[in-house]
Image (cartoon, rainbow over all chains, first blue to last red; front, side, top):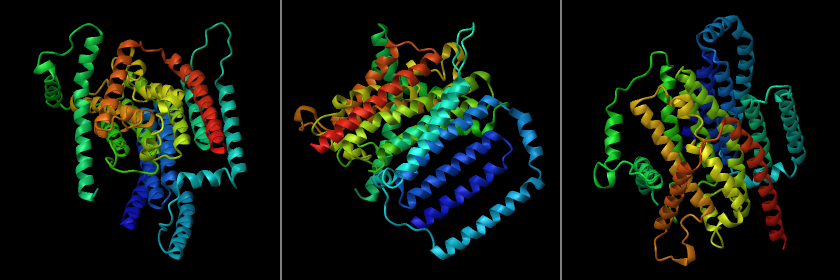
Length: 190
Length: 322
């Protein structure tokens, strides 16, 4: 049962990723990317890591991709954007990435053949993840949070308005960008 | 429960939630009428309850139209996303002891994930409409949701710390010695405000602000697809009220050990009162400006949440140590 679900979720993830790469309309590509992330969350869940699955949905699909859509909306490319993208995606561009991903695919297949299918092992709950993160990997967590803090300060600096004569307006883009960084930061600490 | 009964239960929860959302539209208008000293819909059937059926017939028989300039498939997909996500959220709500579709050990995170996925409905609806008002509404909702999601999640971490679990059943059971609305009142305060912003209910309905953006993200929607957006909004209202009941008001637990009244009645009663509170907020508080909304979030709500987290953590450690 789990094996069938795993293969379905994997097929969805792969197909969605392929569509995400090949769509010329940015909004459609993003929707496929969101579907792909959700499929990966299902795979995490099936592999016995519900906490990772939940974070995948909450952070990647729920927060980071919202910002991607936000940027697409701000740019509002429309039909010209689609045409430019279509011109840019001629076959020659595909060759390099295709070879590289083919190498990865072969490697993956070898690993899968050796490991004998997906491992549906022990359940890893939130507690174990937390204990591992703030036990042996506490340094990595701290470094990551410092990095995010640097990003936050940088975003604040770029988004800051110098008060000359006009009253300060709110800038939505920056605040939401800070939001994403903050959210990932906070999720890690929480 | 066996598999069969779980499926029956799941279907009845779904029908109950959708029916509840439909009745909530009428109930809200009647209650608003009461508080604003007017009648509200009172013509069809006893107390005007037939208004629900009348509205439904009207919406369902309207021409199902997709504007020619819209992005057709995304336009059609957008309203379904919010309904599906909100209905999925009901899967982890414990209506009573054992009365739950699934007791996930990440129940709370599942709920947060579903509410954050519901955002896409508004976003994609605004984007696919190809209309400047819809686009502005969608943009606003993106910024609003992402900002308020941060401390919506964080405000619940105090509850998680005290109960030591993400599972809804464990959270309810751990409130036997005292509901979290007392020990986590800061968390409750922030969660209520974030929840209104997240479900874009009236004080924070900037994505659809009628006075500035015609109807915001659903300007181009009509008929059944518009009804789906409304259904999603009311489902969100009910889901969030269920969550507030579960997380802060002891879920199905009876107050003052009045256990002769069944658990499900207590749960429904508490949820009902929370819904009434949300409707009261709607008629009492005016809509803030967009930048006021943002600065309220980042400058007031976030610090309050962090202070609450630090204090809760310290007290929890102190109690565990003593």
